[in-house]
Image 1 (tube, rainbow, N blue to C red):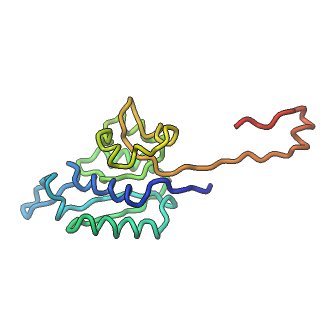
Image 2: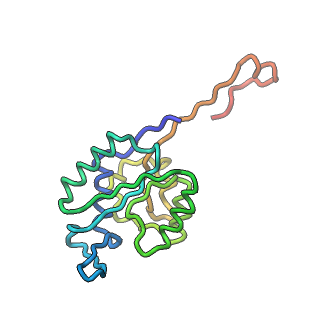
Image 3: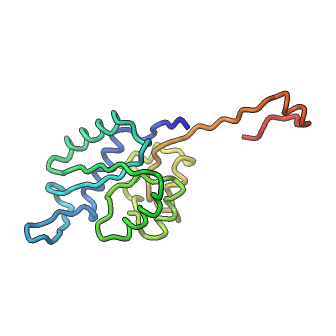
Length: 178
């Protein structure tokens, strides 16, 4: 399937930046305890899970460069995940004390993880993430119980092809429904 990237590089970098400053981004002190500070993300690591095949290498390189320029001192750890058994892997990660900060999840998974309390409510950040320009149909799967829990990332195009002669021979007089 052909996928078209919807999120602009700046929006993705902003998503990463928001996560870097969120309470889930932690730094470790010399004593081994973790601390969290929204005033400065320097010295912290932002862990991002991207799904294999979802994000072109050039795009990842560009977003990484933009992120590092906007967030000096923050380490960006991008881990590419496989689709096989991803639901179990994400579920396990979200139940731990230090899950990934940003996860590329399938649109049908958002309500499940939001209902389980595994996703951050992004409602107050929607405008800053570029959400004023998202179409309702693209954004629908990123909302759960009226709150924004994800950002739409891709749109897929689908086509139905059929043999008009076989269609007519079967007694069908109109085209397949959209």
